[in-house]
Structure formats: structure tokens, C-alpha cells
Image 1 (spheres, helix red, strand yellow):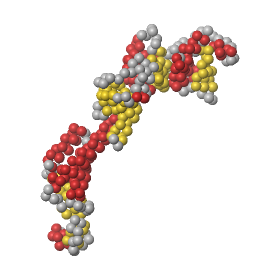
Image 2 (image 1 turned 90 degrees about the horizontal axis):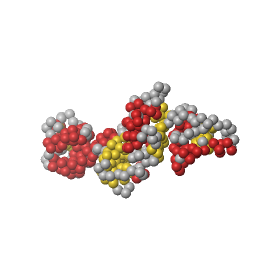
Image 3 (image 1 turned 45 degrees about the horizontal axis):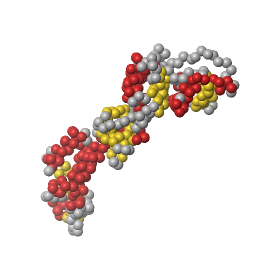
Image 4 (image 1 turned 60 degrees about the vertical axis):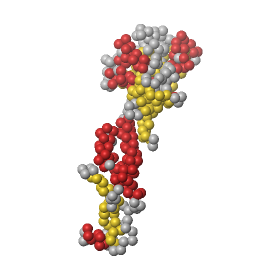
Length: 370
């Protein structure tokens, strides 16, 4: 039994990546538990495991007494002095108490305890491996689904994609490969749990980092992301080097880079805009593809009033207010949109320069690029 047990421990260390010391501690605890249970011992016992000889011996701590009343916890002075003549009453010594059939009993008791410790150790290994992937993208394969969850196999663990984290425009089929954003990794009593998402703004950010080398190497920085998953998103970017076109880098030649991301998100529309520390410029860019006449800034309330041409009002607000809502999320500024006519009636503007502003933003609806 011992040879097989040690062989199994070596196998688990190599194949499962479980620290051998952890397994040996589990084995020792199992053997102590087996001895106490089967031999009615309440004493402090120790198990000595010798890997070289594949042997296991049990030692019990006993008190030296002149007259033994409890042979499980006491040893006679005469017997103790046969081992060492220097022993005196009340000394505590270790005595080997390994039963003849201990191997068989130990095997039965150790199996359950070792299995439990191995399971715990495996969970620890899995948790350590995946906890570093928080807020990152992983690719998995859909293994199964039910009305509440889509189950994605990420290698050593199966993650749950909750209904609230699923894109409403996306269908999920078993065996499909799927990129997911790892929201959180927790080590629970049931083992490691991975919470994943297809709707998190972080998924869009990581996809840009994967597809745009300038973002990956830090030349272009993603400043903010606003997303309504499956429908439309906005992302603002900036490059410290004025010679670098941050928006163009994200779009790619003929829109190739951003098209890869659009395809991954099943046609989700994406506006890439230039970030600016000037709220007038930033809010104007964020309202792309709408043109903006003027932006009135209220620094105290962090609010803006944006004036657009009459014919652009609907475009600026967007369907069900989506364009304005995403622009506000992206910039962090409250946005109140008024047409030029409304602004004139309210006395917000008196003169209007008919020269339209240059639009340095990009929308994936741009027919020149697709």
C-alpha cells in the first residue's frame, strides 16, 4: 500500500501541479486521524513517514509513571528506563505504537482525507492560475447552456456567463469559440468561481489592445469607454505625440482593425473619437457623427449645453437618446442638446458662423471606409 501511495503522490505533483509538501501534510493528518479513531487514542500522536523505505510509523507521547493506570497515555518507569536509564517520573517520551495492521486501516482512512486535501490543493492551483486574469480577455468554448447561463470552458474550469452579461444581439451555440471578459475570480467553498461577461466595457477596451499595436505598446492611450452592448459604443483615445493619429491608428487602413472588433461583437457600432482636456472639444468629438455649432460649459456643475444645427438635432440626440447618453458617459459631463433655433430663442447665441467644424472623429458607419 505504501509504495502505491507514494507513487500516487509523485504522480499528483507532476501531473496536477500540486505541491508534494501539501500532499504529505494531508497524508500525515489522515494517518493520525485513522490511528486515533481505530485505537481509541486521545493522546498526542505523531506519524513518521519515510519515503525512502515507503514506511509509516506511529509514535505516541506518554507520561512516565511508577504505576500505569492508562496504558494509552502512560508508560511504566521500569519500561521507560529500559529505553533510557535517565528517565524519571513525569517525563514525557515518545513511544512507537504502530499496530501490525495499521497499513490496511490507514489506507481506508487516508483515502478520503487525502482526496479532500488534493481537491482543495487543486482548487488553490486553479485559483492562482486564473486570479491573474481578472479584467482580461480569455477565449473559451461553449460547453452547454440553459435558460439562465451559458457555460464556457476556459481550460481547467468552467465559467458561467449569466443572462445579464450576455449580448442581446448574440446567439450562443455549443462548441462555439467565444472571447469573454473576466469580471472577477473568487475562491469559494465550492471552489474557484469565474464571473465572465460579453457586455462589460472592459471587453471592448481589451479587444482594442489586442488589435491595435499602438495601444498595446502605450503610444496611444484609451481614455474612456462607454458601451451599450450589442448596439453602439464610444471610445476616446489620445496620443501624446502630435505626429500620431490616435483615431486613425485604431481604425486601421480601410477600417481593417476596427472591423475585426466589430465582427467579434457581432456588428456592434463603434465610434472612435479624439480625447481632449478641453471640454468644448471633447464633448463636440463625443457627439460624433453629429456636427456641433458651440458648446457652453458650466464648470461648477460639470454640465454643458451643446448647440447643433437644426437638421442635426435628431442625429446628435440619437435613437432613444442613445448618442447623447453615450457621449455623456464617455466624457463624464452632463450634456443638454439644443438646436440652433432653440438656442437663438433662448438667447444662448446671437451670431452663427456657417462654416462647419472639422470632424476628426470616426464612426464605423462611415461609408467611405467600408
